[in-house]
Length: 302
Image 1 (cartoon, rainbow, N blue to C red):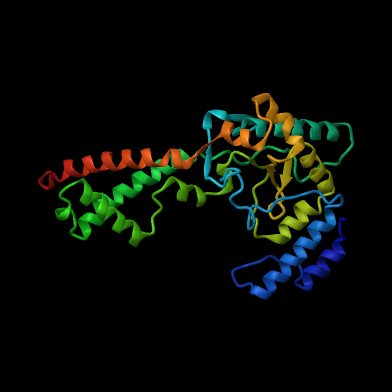
Image 2 (cartoon, one colour):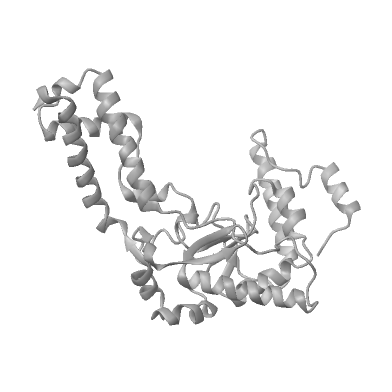
């Protein structure tokens, strides 16, 4: 239900829907979140199921149905073309989003809905390649460890073999709080690494007032919620411009079956790889490679 400008001004004056800042007290934060949730629910006329990836389900798509951390198989990504370039998502997610966008554009063309804040429904994000980013983070880790930490703390003369090199690196990770495993790195990354998330706008999720006035009170908000459900997506309750593919939705099955997938177990086996099957080989390779670099520069240590 869209509120009048007069109602909005009253709420702002009474500090009911003002944006949250670092100075917001815990009690005020709780009150504002309650108000935000109430306004969201009020505009979710058909009580469509949503998701909260910001605070409650931040690991959605990062763990499989057996709670094992996973990353996408990147050869299974498919592009969604926009006027500013291509964005990549898991193939069934891309198919579902393209079909949903075509349906919404058609409804607008025939006058079924008004112009919306959500238009032109072009993805503003793409699936982040966790494997490449993780490998780069390891290169940075070993560069700092080998050529700063060992040198500055006068430890390089104490490295007499590969075992010493490993042991001092463990000491370095403890004092620097650096993430070395792929699993931990994955968990520190945003949900855009999953291939399941399509953001159709760029905004600040902490600004409740913007979310309310620009998206939740958009005249087509209830329509967007219904369309997302129809095509197998959640709308993120705290990030209402974010559509998250619902792998448990019966409506998603239509887009999974062309890839030989009929249930959640098959979905993860087809489109993901467990990090535990990848990280040990990557870490071993990087340790050997960087140790060899280290002894090339410090030959007296051999």
